[in-house]
Length: 429
Image (cartoon, rainbow, N blue to C red; front, side, top):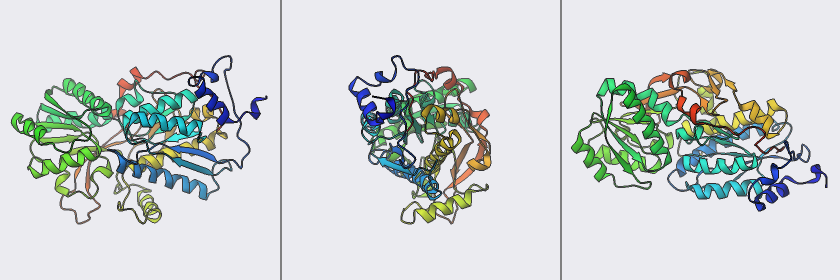
């Protein structure tokens, strides 16, 4: 049987049956399965959470992808082909993420995968994606390991990571608040990796870690952890707590009147985690990659397009998670257009090293995709609560912005070992 007559689904299913991908390698350097004409849609598998700790962020992530896809489909799609999607809940669980990725590729015939908030889930998805050579965009998980030791040739990381945010905040916080720190850390990959990045910078700039309190995922009662903090009286608490856990933490800190002292550094603040909270719960300094009220070209129009498309959502303005989902999807589709093909290796090469202007990104500095780690190097913002605001949506006060070169995670470049093109299965989606 000729290669052009073998369906991609059959080939991928055979790969799975043989123990995962071995059929692609053997004597072949390139293995192409051709799309069945331009009437075949480009199919994207959306691998975001709809339940679990990051369900709210997963919904926002999907809305961002959806707006980008709708804009391309309104213009006729990509390379004359419409874009279709399939979504399966990854449940904020790595094992589920792995099963979802396998099904998306081998049964749903998805040529690309997009979406993640949990870094553990993203890592699991990317391992399956690399096995089959399917390009995977990690939109919103921010563990440094995602573009470090867990990097892959097919994976591209769109969010700032814990090291980027820590570099923007730690030195200034030591100078402003003091060198006696305690860490409050979600007890899973992202929390540990982010805390480790903070520890390295504290050692570099003369700070000390008095203690680290580990918080299991799903924690709703922070009373014992907060009692330890009160007794220790650190200058600064560096919190790497996310999702629904962070909402519970913020509420209890505010109730105890601990939001002002000690000082709080929350590594990153995802918009879905705080939208609608009382402003007094938004204590401390925190990082983000984007804000809907930035005084920059394109921002107002972007917000209006969001509001026109999502009239029923309770979140009346877009946040960083929506923004990352939109930008990742838009840039993937543009990369396919530049390549003139859906061949995965050709699209990967279009993404690697790709430069994006500050205007295109609606940020203060130009951005680019690091070809060595596949992480987007971008502007990092520090913010705090916008106290006194009369607009309930305008919750952040932006304090500073850092250029990509000032907050780059150099450790990721040392630990990332991308597979070669020859080791990566190749096909036309």
